[in-house]
Length: 114
Image (cartoon, rainbow, N blue to C red; front, side, top):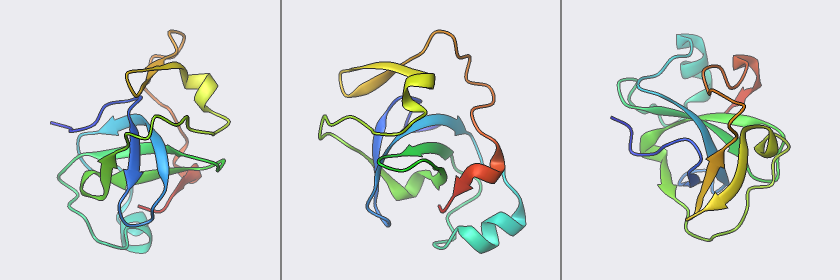
């Protein structure tokens, strides 16, 4: 079971960026090649992984649960896809845009470091 949900604002412990969770995978879903090249800290593949829109960037990342914390700054996430997938922030969490069902949020080729 995942600790974080779509819309939650997070802070990456290793790379010190903020972001908003777009989607959750119960376990690692990318390729072994991606894992070997991109997952620098070699987190467990059997725990939840998150698709994250990165603050002040235009890309998204794929992040292991052990590398993120809840962000409680109350500051918005500045990313061009936030208004596509989310509406307003309520209780430090973005509300989902009702026109998005959340099944396939991002092409894999747009995912950055873990």
